[in-house]
Image 1 (spheres, rainbow, N blue to C red):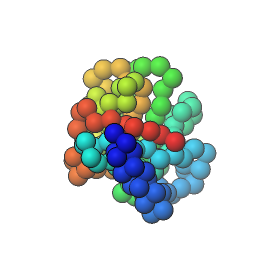
Image 2: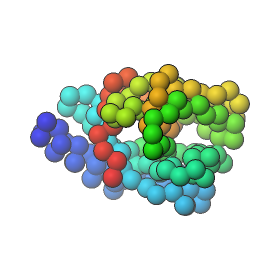
Image 3: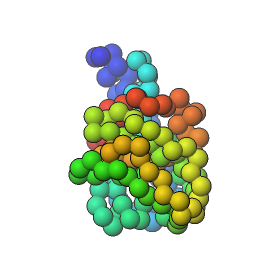
Image 4: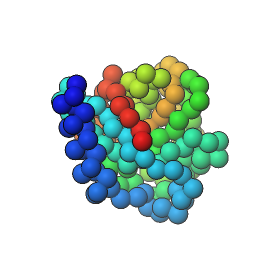
Length: 154
């Protein structure tokens, strides 16, 4: 486990030096930023630069009006208590992968390739405390699947 921590730390440093902000960043200027580390296998970690949506207005805005996200950038919705997440993306221009994350940090489900500007509700299959939105296809490209773990958000 210690080796995994060292490996994750090295990945974190590289990603922090190369990550860029979402375009146009002005729509996300009020959002705090952090780095999320996802344990993708026993010996692999993935660091992602994220915007944090912790408050009501930020959660209501989400990625609305954002036309493009860079490869290792996402938006993390964090909820104070477990909730059955039911969201529409009717004002979201980009196709997303939505990762539903349990209270223990493990991935409960993935909604892949959401339809931009859709009024259909995307619902988590069980109560979750976080939802991570990333570019569509990211989960498949990085072999993310149910059970992988979000290790830290700093």
